[in-house]
Image (cartoon, rainbow, N blue to C red):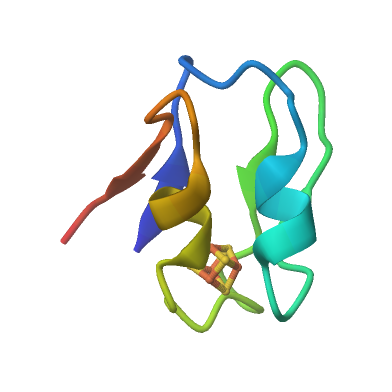
Length: 56
Ligand code: SF4
């Protein structure tokens, strides 16, 4: 699954590239709704801060 780490700088890029609106702007960290995510990898690919990791 994909996970947003503490390196996130809240630039919102992932929100614009996620095709299924799986990313939630929660406080203090954004999170990926795993029930919605289709694991396309687009958010990780586009993150300028390398703040999205893939966990087995
Ligand atoms: Fe959205 Fe794809 Fe990232 Fe999942 S892996 S949160 S579907 S952009």
